[in-house]
Length: 91
Image (cartoon, rainbow, N blue to C red; front, side, top):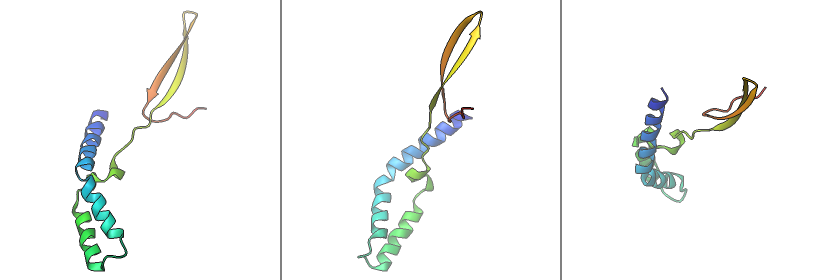
């Protein structure tokens, strides 16, 4: 399941990089109050026609947290560091 998620995220990153300039230009034109309304509206429609997955807001940034797990066996204590994709609540 995580491979599928990683592949989807990778595709989103590629799309975001591909459409980054177009998206930023259209956003800048939409937010410029000095431009006439019809021109801003035209750029707003261009922005809405871009793929949704090309937005950087849809790209996921993985959060890794390190937790230490101590375990004892045969009288020896071992501490293991584990990276988890989501923070684990400490009790």
